[in-house]
Length: 103
Image (cartoon, rainbow, N blue to C red; front, side):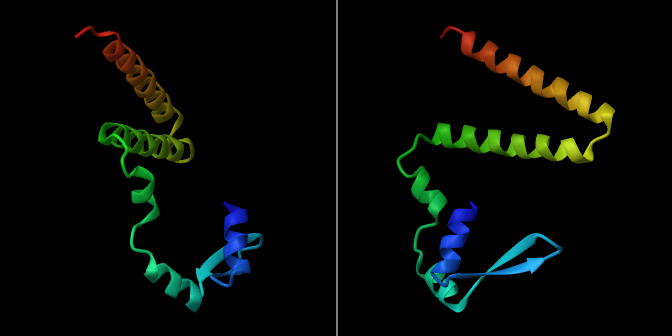
């Protein structure tokens, strides 16, 4: 991601500001805002164009699950983390059960 951000800075579309030590906050410049306003189709729609809706839906759900699980690593108590591990393991088994079904 950083090479892309640096490229946008080099093109004058973003400006990087230092915050809290080593962190950088990137903001659109006027040229960057103008370029963003010209975008007619969001990039995430271009990526999914022509894709199977079921695949897109499944990928989105997995991404949301991953985000929740990642957050739990920092916010959950040890007991909650174990419950989450159990849920994820059970979900994996359920998926394999579905895949083993014959139609």
